[in-house]
Length: 128
Image (cartoon, helix red, strand yellow):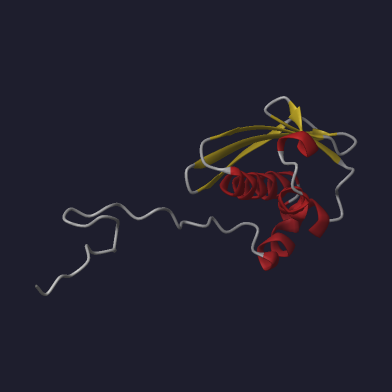
């Protein structure tokens, strides 16, 4: 198997993933997963597509992450890994789609409107 690449986005985070056959090592920005995401929850989010297909020790994953915060980055990485796994084996698409790993979450920060302090918040009303 050659190197398979895919891209995932969430909020303002972008993840580019390169998957090869290997032992299950995940490297993000040249740092191992447990150092980049110290939180066990975020590590679990990243590994969800692999756990769903029981392929945690089948592939080595190298990822370039930029933009956004840690939550957006972990979810962008999850989408990219899921897309790469579908490129490797198209039969896995249904299993990943049923778990919702192939859906791009399009929610992002709403823009600030003029004459308001935030997107929807209004300045305090004063009767007198």
